[in-house]
Image 1 (cartoon, helix red, strand yellow):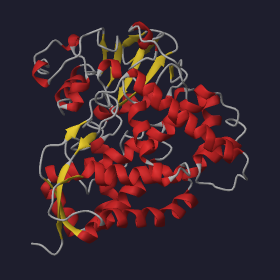
Image 2: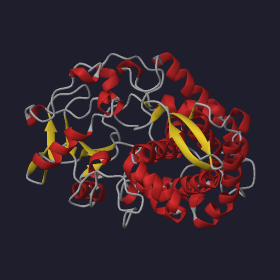
Image 3: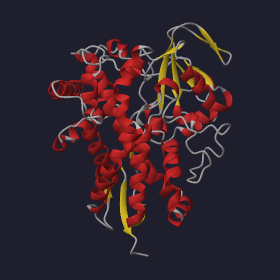
Image 4: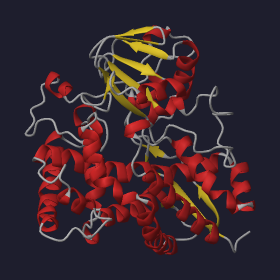
Length: 431
């Protein structure tokens, strides 16, 4: 494997490096926000690109919008069963990592029919009638959070708003004790970390990661046991849904933990990092912020544009089940095929002025941030609703959320997110 690049100064020039040597998997590209020119060149010159060597092994990059859609639709050739990220669990064995628990699995890393059966067990939580019931609760929580924030004083938006709102929502979806809700955030962050590679939670060790996930399993098993012995009458409680559905009621610990971490991460990262990314995007594009102040009715479309612009999950991975020719390239059985959502969302052959943040964009939901096909994000409407309600309440209170320092980004090539976004709130009463 290639060595870890430690800082952006070590990155090769995306314009002059040989295209065959281009490796877009380095987490530093996202952490330093340097990824755009590398993917722009791949889209133009080699949109289905083979990287023969990286810190994650060999892989194919699929970087154009329509090609990503084709891969997503063809789950018979491009399977989710091995893994959904560029990092293989089997790579831990190659690194000599000793693990207490072997591979966990979840329905997102499965193909039909098992995938469909297990997803169906929980997808009812986000049906329209449940979203309608949740909106009032979300709005009251947003009001409470926003009204508690200091004015004209620097604070970390990620901590005080993005994490707080999404963690409270997660607690609701699992009927989890609200006073213990920060455990959910920690479990989410830990689940997507790779301690051996310095990716994810800073300073996290493999032992601490495994302790946290075992704590998640133990805590949720106790709640599960209670729900299993109660009537299945809470249709916004994921644990109850899993406990009472025929396809999921007898999951072993590995499957249970896998599905838990999937639902926790899925309910956390998309919304959390889009909440932060929207504030950043509006500060980087002040003319769009002016449009919003002049016409708050743009908020629903702006929410979709924020999610496209942020693309909170940078990629999803599939594994070829057989030799297959795709766009003139010979993909071999067992090859990793990585769909780079961050690149597809910048494809100007499909999205007009794709490199611009435009809150009044026509057809703003035409993006790949939520995936496509059978694995399309189950909670996409809930994420959009939380963002919409948040911005509706923000615009009632504040003239501006002003960025007062540089954002700090997560070290990851999977989660495209933030640890710190320093801001000040300018109330409407001030000029």
